[in-house]
Image (cartoon, rainbow, N blue to C red):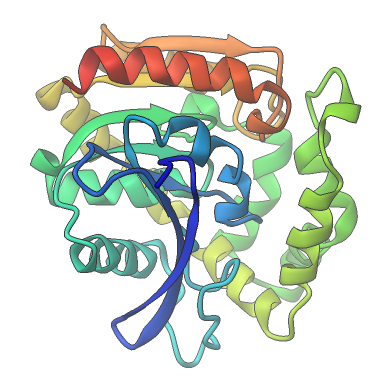
Length: 290
């Protein structure tokens, strides 16, 4: 069977269905792909087969996203700690105890928690616009979210609800992209359909309110970087208006050997620079995951 074949599975974890994509042979080194907002493992649909010759690639959908279960906010505690619990439980279910991780956007704070809980599990980190430093926040994008998280009044909530609409979803894919024709509109059509499910707005607002817990984790995370000197590759859409390039450069403060590549791309750099990112990742992992 070709390692390029991608399988689509659902596992029951802690009583909830977790969807994940998987390719590669079970005995190959594991690479876990953790998606961002407002998407799902769909963002990795082309990267998974490109890396599966040499790695067991696993890409789950977070609870409330993609094809995974979407319990209400009354039934599930939508925090980044809870999403991490579910990811850790899935990896345990799959028998994955050591792995490299590729993170983007929301995937980053989940991976950071996994690393802090079990540093020995992480063999390498690839961050594609997955933030770990306050320098990475583009103020114009984040001021509204932090204001809402600090004071979740109806007045502060209103612009955040606007951020769940099609215009902003489309913008997340197209900001910083020099040739928008490279980005398939399927991305924002699919993401928006999932965002528009009844009750999903409450889920996203809960995660917005919880986001400052990720920033509070940064000092511990940066100490982990200094202590572990974990191999890290930042392959970053340098034109991203959500997490700017200073966020990529900052990794080298605590990880002097971190490799930083700034691409002429935006927040979802895989959409326009798949081949380049695949080559960079392949070279990096071949050197650090022996």
